[in-house]
Structures are given as C-alpha cells and as structure tokens.
Length: 251
View 1 (cartoon, rainbow, N blue to C red):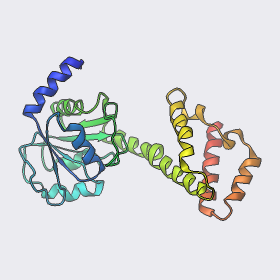
View 2: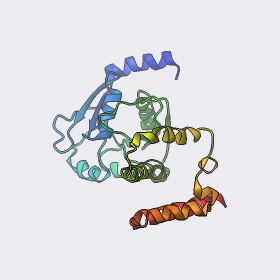
View 3: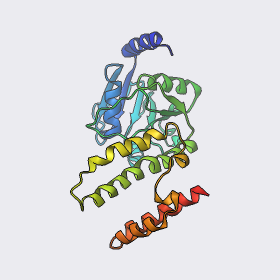
View 4: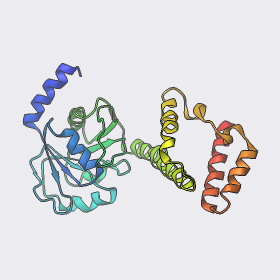
C-alpha cells in the first residue's frame, strides 16, 4: 500500500470502524496506543466487560492464554469479528462465538510503560475466511508495515521459538546481572555487547555469529568457569548444557 493510499485508508477507517480491546496488560495497552487516533478504539476491563460495544467491527481478546476460555462464555451474542492475540492458542477456540473469527498475533515483547515503534513489528494473522483475513490485514496495516499470515500450527512453533529467542535470552541476562552483583561493576556495561550481539544477526546466522570459549573448545576457561560456579549447581548445570549445545552446533 502506497503512503498516499494508506493515509486515505486511515482517514476512511477512522469514521467507520470501532475496535474493542479486552484486556489490561502489556499487549492490550500497546494495541490501544497503536490504534489510538487511527480509528475508534475502546479498552475494556476483562473481568467485568463493562462498556463493551457489541456492535464493534472487531473485538480483540488481548489477555493471557488461560483467560481466553474464561472470557468467551461471558461474551453475549455479537456480529463482531472476534480475535485473540495469543501465539500458542488455536484459532478454532473462537468459533463457538461467531462464524467470523481469527488471530492477530504481534511478535514482540511489550512492557506497559516503555514507548516503542510499532511500524516494523511483525503481526501474524489467521482468519476463518478470506474476507475476515482481508479485514484483519487492513486493521493490522494501521499499526505496522509488516503483516504476515501463519496458521495455528506455524504460530505455535513461532511462539516456542520466540521463547528461546526472547524470554530465555532475557533470563540469561538476569543471570549475568546476578553474577555481576558480586563486583562493583554496573549491569549497563553489557549494553554495547548485547546491542552488537543482536546487530550481527542482521548479517550472520546465529551459528556464524557465535563466539566464546564453547565454540573455541577452550577447555581451560570452561573448567575455570565451572569451578567459579561450584556453589551454584543450577547455574553450573545450565552452563554445561549451553556449552554442549554450542559445541554440538559446531559439528
């Protein structure tokens, strides 16, 4: 979509589409921010559903996975397209409420109070019909230029992969911070290192970008690190497991 057509589309959709976002967490908050000013949008408290507009073009369940099945029975009959934002919940769980349903899954980590650029966030959509898919594409295009299709199975695999790429990476950064707490060095010294680690992945595969004692099979340093973790059996086991994984990838 050209910039001029996109601008005209945004003007048109602002007057004709109402979107209701059910949720109070990170994803719901950011979707509300991203769509605000581009169309009519309301943020609905998920427990009471007070004020929910059942004539909305789209109702988005932006809640935790386990909350989707809790909210669906509370929804009254509606002609709205119903979607969820989960990476791991099958789309078909929504069909009991409407013949028009789908998924609007943003592949991003969100924190409520942090501002972010939505323009390049990948949004993966799935829909119950081609017409619903077209509508979800149009709405997602108000947020990002990066709209893609993924069925439920592919999305589950994507979500699993993202746990390794994002959640576990962040947890390992937490381990680094914990280990550094035994010194007077602040965690911020890692920022250039972490930025460069991610930057390299734009040009190299993870296997090509790997550095460190494991990929070099530097046994002296590996033994020294394991000795330093002698009083931390869980971290020692984690270090050994990741070292073996890196060395296996080298083969």
